[in-house]
Every structure is written in C-alpha cells, then in structure tokens.
Amino acid sequence: MANRTYKMMGDARSSTEALNVVLSVGGAEVYNGSVTAANTAYDGTSDNITELFTFELDDGTTGDTSWSCAVTGPVDGVLVLQYIWCNLVEPDVTIATSWFKSASHFSGNYSDSEKSWIVDDIPTAEEQASIATNLPGLDSAILTRLNAGNSTQTPDGDAILDENMLATVNADHYYILWAGSTAGYDNAGINDNFFKSIQVATTRDSVQIDGEAYSLSAGEWPPVHAGTTLTMTQDLTPPTVTWNAMATIDIGRTE
Image (cartoon, rainbow, N blue to C red; front, side, top):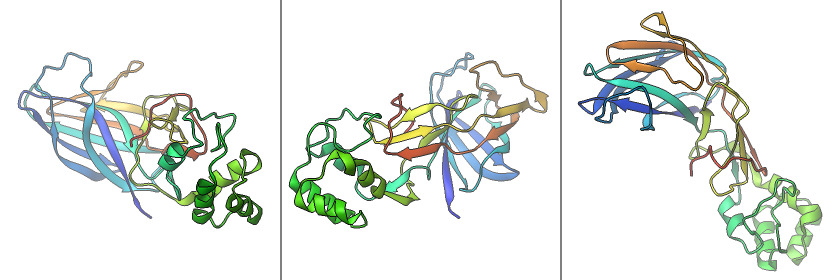
C-alpha cells in the first residue's frame, strides 16, 4: 500500500499571521504544526482560500473518518477548513496528454461524443509511427496501420487511448475530493487534459466545537477559533478519475 497525500485548503486569520494546528484522523495524529494566516479580522466570510497544510494516509482509506482539529494561537485566530484535494487517483499514461494536445492532429476541441485522439486531421505518418513505438501492446492490425501511416479515428482512436492508460496512478496531480455535501460534481482538468473526475465523497457531519453541536448551513464551512477543537465526520472516499473522457466543468485538477 502507498500513502495518499491530502491538501487541506481553507482560510486562516490571525493578528500574528500564524496559527498552530493539530489534526487527527481516525484517532491518529496526521498533522501538528503551524499554518500561515492572513493578518485580517475574520468577518464570517472566507475569501482567502489557500493551501493550509498537507497530510498523508494509507491510500486504502475511504468512507467516513473521524476528525479532531485543535487550533491554538492569539485570541483573534480563526481556521476554516474547506476543500480537500488528493493525489493517487489519476491513471498514469505512457504518452503524455501534452503530446496529444501539441500533435498536429489535435485541435483543442476535444468532444466527449467523439472520445478520440483524432479531432480534425489525420495524424502525420511520423506521429503515427511514434504512437506505434510507444504502445507496442496494441493489436497487431492497429500497429500495422500506424506504421503504414494510415490509421484513422475509426476504428483505432479509442483503442489507442485505452492502451495508453496504465494500471498505476499519478502522484503529482491532485483532484478535488471534497467540495461540498453533494456528490457527483463533474470536474475536468485544466485546458482539457482528457481526464474526468467525479466527486464521490458526500459526508461532513456530526460537527462539534468543544463538544457542542455546530449546525452547518448550506455551503457553510465550520470556523475553528483559537483555543477550541473541532470534531466531525468527514468522508474521504477519493474521486473517480477516468481517462479518455471530458467533463463539463473546467476545474478540479492541478497541473
């Protein structure tokens, strides 16, 4: 098993421009350190969204997990936990998406109905030969057409992209795991990266501050004031990310 890295996004405010945070997930401490804070008073809104800190958990972690987040600092210090990003969800690929986007046949107008690497023009013979070299596991008939320079979108396009996807997952690219209480957010990568991400996590509840229930309004994130401890249940089911698909919203992936 590998460790998945989570990026905790949110808002931090403090007159000393620093807070200390101790976060435990599932009863184990995963972060204990400082968080850079903006030197502005908290007015109930969070418009200073930054990466607060990162932590790691076994990549088999999924479903509801118990959280405890203790914040210390000056009396005006406030921490607001918002979005959660994670890695190890995007399939690795043999030929980088940047190659498909820069190759002569790719127009940049990827269509989910086409779901193929040939959009406007037939790739050059040199590009087709490069694909054959990099994806030797393709069906022999496809390799023959690629090496002859006469491969076409039908029937080869999807088979080529499917072969390009590997069984391993990428550690460099992060996707939104949590962006709200409703699952099914349909997120694509920046500038059309051939990837589609669907948020699966649905639960952030049982929210308490120092043992007192805190009722979250729609779209609200719980503020944790210095000297208090937030406890809650947070779903950490990672998003599902598929290759050779396009989503409807151009957010949700880091380059």
